[in-house]
Amino acid sequence: QLQASGGGLVQAGGSLRLSCVASGSTFSTYVRGWFRQAPGKEREFVASIFSRITNYADSVKGRFTISRDNAKNTVYLQMSSLKPEDTAVYYCAAKPRYEKTYAYWGQGTQVTVSS
Image (cartoon, rainbow, N blue to C red; front, side, top):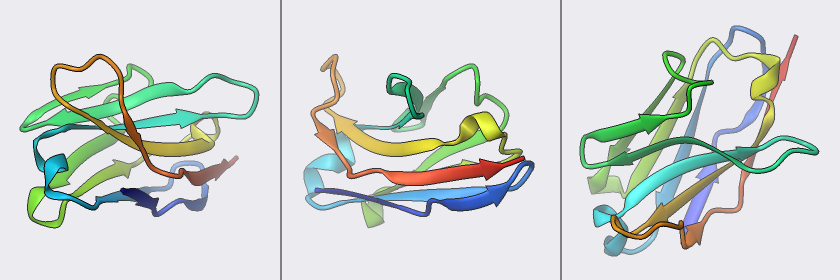
């Protein structure tokens, strides 16, 4: 129900935009988020959006921007000034606003930042 895309290989300092398309109108009222998991590390929160409220991990503040287009049921993660430590599989996710955990996950898209 969630399909992520847009990953790839980019040089440090470059930019990428990830997209996450949701099937089903329910998701238009959900919190939408991005997470990432680097090799050998646990999955970590990157950013989330609900209505116009956004939250970011400290490590990406000022470099990444999350946005959504409800008409397209799509959430975007614009990533700029990428660093090698941003290399990871990025996952999109969704949850009802007052739930603690994300119940819906996309398949992940690989982002590799070369130095």
